[in-house]
Image (tube, rainbow, N blue to C red; front, side):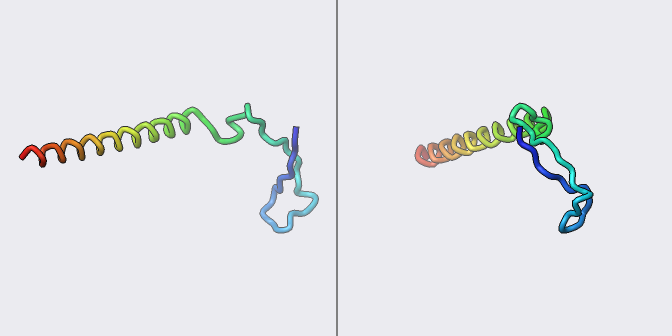
Length: 71
């Protein structure tokens, strides 16, 4: 497991007294990386919405071209 230093105060450079050692998040620790059920469902929904939008744009463009050609 890897570790990294975290500064507990907002000063640069960080004083030695204010440094704390934390374990790096592993791949299985999704909550530590900020991946929650809400963020995952929002990203999946957004991706599906974009794909659906482009499909509707292509369908609309094809229908408009067909209507213009049939006139």
